[in-house]
Image (cartoon, rainbow, N blue to C red; front, side, top):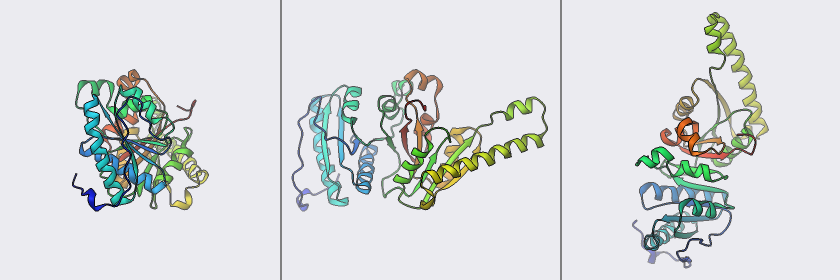
Length: 302
């Protein structure tokens, strides 16, 4: 990165020692980053979120060896200087060599949000066990922001994909909290459900159409009521309903809305469930063009 630190009048940034249990401050936004373009971009997105919502920012680099962690600390310090100079966000920095899952769960304890870059599946282990964001979703019980888009500005166009019976008000509230503009869309997908059975029973197309229309009207009323209960009406939120395969329809709606961020809820699952069952979260992590904010469903609502 091109930065001239001598031009910046900054207080010295504390340099923590490389250790297996670094003293990262509690609460705030925690970004796990590396030296790739995606990692740097995730740091900038985390900084924008921290700035917009007045939260502390913590930058962490996970390494395999202590020597690599020592080198990564210099990158983190340089990046922290750049963030403070350009968008007036100060960040603590920690580079650590430790077992990944143990370190991630320890560092994330007490944080408001964890931010990671979206990573392509480059190895068989990633394809079988999942990329780092997919694995983190199995380890953590706090919101996870998976960054894919360039972090050029705050989020303004946000799509919240919800189910009326699955903690939807909290998801709408989170989407409203993240959105800085008036372009919040609350989206619900109606799966075919009983329509297939009706067609197998040789029911007329008119009856199937009427059945779908009733479901559409009921779902529209539920979504509009959710928006009101979440207090998002004054923010310009509006509801959208679609029929079909959930993942495909969410991806289509995000593209059509020009969404910069998709907000969804997810229950914690095992590696076995992710590998053999897949799901909306995995599809969106791998295919969505927008960033993805995944909120853990409250216990009993998964």
